[in-house]
Image (cartoon, rainbow, N blue to C red; front, side, top):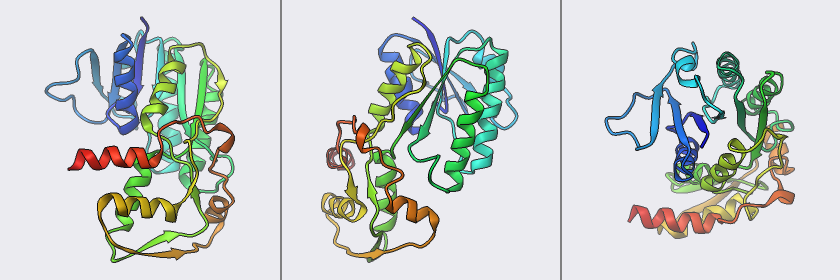
Length: 258
């Protein structure tokens, strides 16, 4: 089996990718900003690194066959710089297959984080490495965090006219595992969730599942970013290949918290 490294392997997506690789019997390494836990998952080689300086990356990347790059930061410019540091270390390691996870709409939505992801894509394409890039829609986890934050108020504001096509993170991880253990494929088809809903409809699902009562206040946010969201530039209806709906995800999460 191949040796696969996951950057950001302690994050939400990274953990799911690591678990998927371990299940398939691959030798797995991960890099993380976090210190190695006292009892790491069996079969996983943990490397604590500094993505800003590249410290620790050369040792972690030595001898790997492929890298799934899930490490990210909210600041767009820093995210592109982080990816460049990862790419440079991968080149020094002998040019393994680099798989990069991006977001549907990064080339159409003028949001600073998205611009950083688009710049990071360019770094990957121009790296000279064998590469694969997958864009996905937002994760169910992110939608849940946003709704949870909005629901702390007695009146719950929700962006009006915006639809969401969220996808289950484990399904994204499965796709990344398949890509990382396959041949470099360049830009691959997007991966979107199975359904598209207005944010207000998802808010009602959330409130019902949590047993909360809130009045919803539709808010039409101004600006180019929200205009592109209302235009659906972040959606991939022709690539609705996910199978787990937000309602199913929410029921699972609600069961865990009880």
